[in-house]
Image 1 (tube, protein in one colour):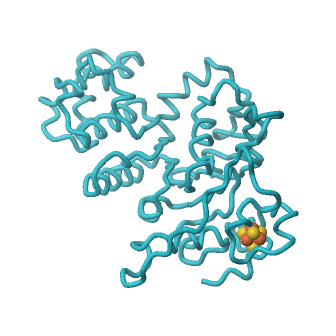
Image 2 (spheres, helix red, strand yellow; image 1 turned 180 degrees about the vertical axis):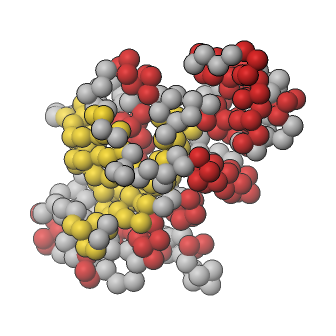
Length: 322
Ligand code: SF4
C-alpha cells in the first residue's frame, strides 16, 4: 500500500519585508499507513507550519505550493467544506493544551459523543461508545467520569479526554503537536505510551510534532529532521538516530543525554537556530556546521537517497561519522 500522506515539494510562503518568503521550502515526506512519522526540529524549523498545512489551517496570509496528498486526494486544492469534513473524521488533532480543544461548559461525555450523534449513531448507543472511547484513552471509571466537566480533570486526564475526542471520528490520521510538553515527565511518558498503543491497536497513522528527540525515539517509526523549513534528513527512526547522515541530526542527538549512554555528557547545540524568514545562503545550517566549507555557503544541498529509504540533504553526507 502507498503512504496515507505524501508531501512533495511542499512550500509555504509568508509575506516578508519585501517579498513572499518560503518558510517551508520544498519539503518531502510521507506518513505510512499504520505508522507514525515524527517531525522534529528546533523552534523555527517549520514543523508546526507543516502540521497546519496537513490539517488545512494555515495562516490566511500564507500561500502554499507543491503536492500534499491524503491517499489519492490532493489536499492543497480541496475546498474549505471538504477540508472541514476531513478534520475530525479522516484527520484528528491533539494539541499541547487540551483546554483549547475542550469546551469548559460542557460535560466530557457530551463533547466526546457529539461527533457520534452528528454521524447518526442512535441515542442509546452513544453513551456506550463514549464509555468505550474514554476507557481506550485510559480514563478510569468512565461511566462516572463522562459526566464531569473539563475543570474537574487533572492535566493528564484532560489530555486523555482530548485523545478520546480525537478518536471519536475514527480518524485515519492523528496529528499530535507537542502533545505532552505541558505535562510533567511521568505523565508525559504514560500519555506517549498510550498514543503509541492506540496507534498500533487501531492501525491508524500518526504525525507527531515535537522538539524532543526522546519522545521521537520511542514513538515514531519514521523521522523527518527539519531545519529552517527544510528537510535535513529522513528515514526510519532507528536508522536515522542509530547512524545520522546529516551534521544537524548528529548535533541534535549529541545534545540529548538520554538518547546516548547516560555516562556521556550532552553537548549543547552551538549557535542559535536559523530564522526561516532570513535563512542563511546555501545550506541553512552552514553557520553552525562543523563540516561546512565554501560550497555549503553557495549551493543549497538537495536531498539524496543515500541508502534505500534514507535521504540526506548534505553535500558531504558520506563524511558524517557515527
Ligand atoms: Fe554542513 Fe555543508 Fe552538509 Fe550543510 S551541506 S550540513 S553546511 S556539510
